[in-house]
Length: 53
Figure 1 (spheres, rainbow, N blue to C red):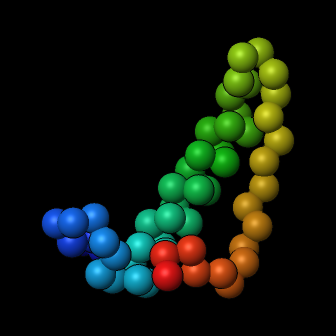
Figure 2: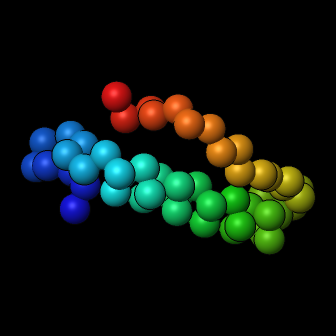
C-alpha cells in the first residue's frame, strides 16, 4: 500500500511504480482502441520528475 488513510503518499517508490504502471496501461489501451472513432497515438516519456512531492 502506498497511501495512508488520508490519501497521502507514504511509500514513494511504490507510488511511482503504480503511477508508471497505470500510465503504461492507459497508453496501451489508447493505442489499441480509437476514442470517438479517432485513432490515438501515445508514447511514454520517462522523466525523473517526482510529481508526488
